[in-house]
Length: 218
Image (cartoon, rainbow, N blue to C red; front, top):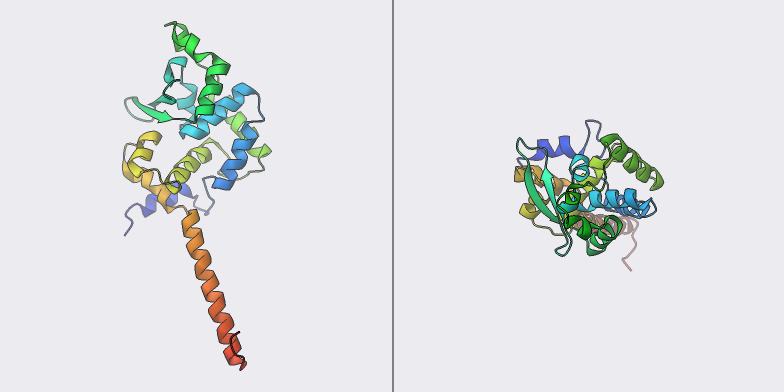
């Protein structure tokens, strides 16, 4: 029995059944739309999408948060009573683009400049950027927001085989039961099993129909 079922329903779906996460197809469309933005906006959105971080956590990043050679970004989990740092790997091409755009290595050599934020914006600006991305990608609904990207990171990570405890750390969850809600999303393997089930049902229905009409199977 899944003890986390009530939590999963409230987290991944609204009371009206509306989905709160982007499907992987929608996520790919959003990622494509991000690349068409102004570089600073694009890199913010891509960092949001590839870390699964909250908007406030990405806005709080500084030049020193990025370990360029290791391909890792250190994120402060701000939704705890006390900030906890977590390290999240990001794609190499994204790290290269971040270093090129913001001169991260150069800033890190100066203690003062190392504390500069790449995106010194407010949350409203960040939400507007994500909203524009969703519109350009043709995505609408409750999931067309930063939280939808975060949930998509969780769902996609599990569907790609990322271990639950590792995904928990990347997302900054205090309890693994919170991360486990993403296992309730219907993944590609589950959809494939359902497809085989439907095909079997249709085949048996067709065979029964032929027998009822006195027809032999081909």
